[in-house]
Length: 322
Image (tube, rainbow, N blue to C red):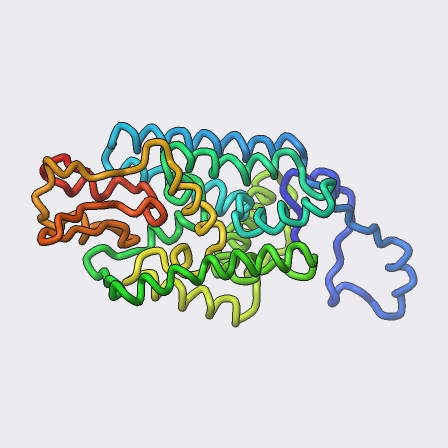
């Protein structure tokens, strides 16, 4: 089991043994010398540092959305999100786990910290103003999907299938609430395919830091989760190479919650019909198929429920209509 790098100094005097170094005839001596490792809770300041980073990312993302900055600016926020919240912090801002934690907190309020509650509520509050900014600038799960997707090989789901599949995250949200109240299962965490990337990345980072400060861990290949966990991840990444954000669109319960809040957004993304030429460039660009344009029926609209505020449509539009 790995020890967080900020705790290594407390274990400096602990003698480490391997099986090869232990003489079975001296097992009693080994038992007397063995010092249990102490795993302290996460320092409070680090939790609030994570919260500060999350709020900063979302505020920057909101500003980029409101001012229609180039989409690549939001891509840089996704990279920072993946690097810090995903790898360095092991995916600690996890909307999946937070959803269950808050639901459990309804039954037992002492189980939810103030920082955890703010992490859960803040993206929803932002959604009431500008939509699902968190999905592009703040969520490590969304960040890895954003960066894996191959634009030139994209595949759009048939309209009817896409419409029916929108029900799945809502059903998962209902199931997450049920299991959270029952206190029997973190359903969202069980469905999250990206945990092996986050946990393994964090382990490698901590091992590197441990070596740098002079308290190296055991030298071995660090891998989290079973072969099934990695197979699930691989399948999700392969699907996400052609169909953007498959997990966000098909399974994530928090995305459904954000979508519902975004439907009440104060400044949602809209299409200026007086400028729109119905060229459909924005429709082809949209990663979540949130835009509908029908020239014959004079329909030009953006679904606030589906829009993740990535700015790619406004980049693509030659008439500045989006």
